[in-house]
Image 1: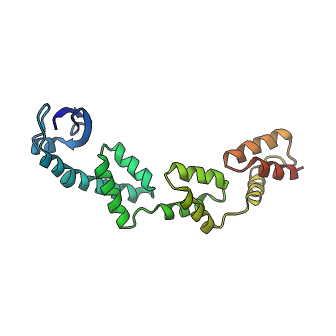
Image 2 (image 1 turned 135 degrees about the horizontal axis):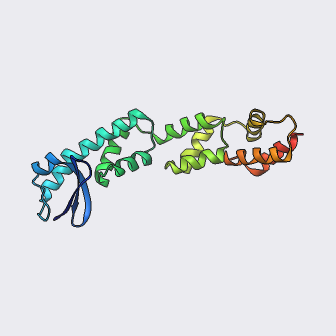
Image 3 (image 1 turned 90 degrees about the vertical axis):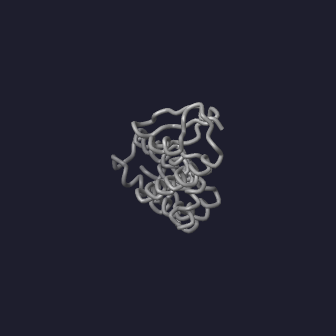
Length: 199
């Protein structure tokens, strides 16, 4: 393994490339401690030592810090650590570590998310958002069952009542409300059925 690039990211932090690929990021003192120099070979033992003793510990601390700020899904945490420049094997170890302590739990995240959003959005929109956060369809369905979602048309009626500007809805106002409700993930048929009740 040959060090093919060392690029500064900040005054103290450097990207290290090995064999033309980004391997990890290290601080200036760590470069010197492990004798990492451009166009020089890095021993397998040194590489493994950097991964286990430096980067894994750093990724675990970073994961814990990220989770104290806000709840995240496993995918979101993985992406955050990846953006920090951690190698995949180090990220997997850090995610497994926080999971083992129950600090990350996609099932619980989905349940809380649905509870917090169910009065404002339709289930389709909530499910799409959770899916983008890396939650599986199975977990979304289970969490939805536990959350006792309100009936869609009742939800729409409540939102129309809060959002309508006119007592009797004009066609223009109905279209505005339709757009608002559609963006919230309610089905066209449910929206039009409720709006047609409005005179």
